[in-house]
Length: 435
Image (cartoon, rainbow, N blue to C red):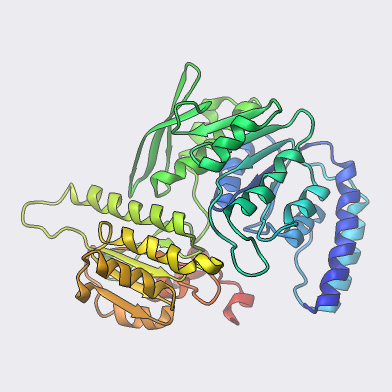
């Protein structure tokens, strides 16, 4: 979209969205953070939608445009002036009528200073969740450092309505300090920290999913969901908290989560060639999330090996890691940090992209066998190579950023049933196929 058209459309959409929000009488729940926003939003949706009429952002439509399109119930016109002309008329019509949803569940994506100001000027939340604060979006024109990220994302707390609830993951150091310093009532904390209001413990993960315990006052809850990774406890717990706030019986919420599934590309299990197992995390990547994904690979392989008979070969652990984008001047250091974690979690490492090569170089420095580390410029080059090397029972973690990495292409090449790619993989729409 040309810059003028983009600014014009954004201006009109914002005015219309604000007009529609003035008529909205339900509750607004907003989710922000550096990682896990979409998964957290979808978990909350799964639970709340059992009792309330809930409207949410589709997929990861969490930018300024995404928020406005969600409120006005229209799709994107992308770069077509003609399409936008029709959509603006449609949006104007929708703005005349009240949205009868009981809950508006919104994901607030922030990747540069001022983004949160824009989002909260349109929709102020009754409940706000901050999932975590990590070093991402550090490129030129984005954030200077992690403290600047925190300053922007924490603005959501200041935008809360007077009786609003602020839900914070206090295993994140910045959010722990924020919870202590926040002068207002209504802060609800969760995490493995003993001081958390919703205390997480006994986390276990396997190919069947994740299990953990939540303790809240004198109530103990066993949480199970068919999603991968112990770190998913931070995705699921806010859904339990929101259910508690809004009066949904906790057992109902727990039962709902036993059937919850993540969107494509968020550590989903896909059947691979030669009876391999793909852990598809191709949607996106950031340093802390990749470290957690490597830990998940290690834990799942260990659990899978328990059932092996004497003499049977353990499952090979394969890590396919792409560039992590938008890390600015810290890109080298953060890729090397991930590289230091690889040796203990993977038997084979395949990297995709120039910066990802740093992961392999550090892994070698930590003692990984040079015959087990491979570098490629593109996802398709990597898949062409590994299709000839794949072995029965391989457990293959795939994790990388989206732009110029696109590891879903690697996954598609290694799928046992590529005909299912449209429903199982991320970024399969026509607009992405052109890129």
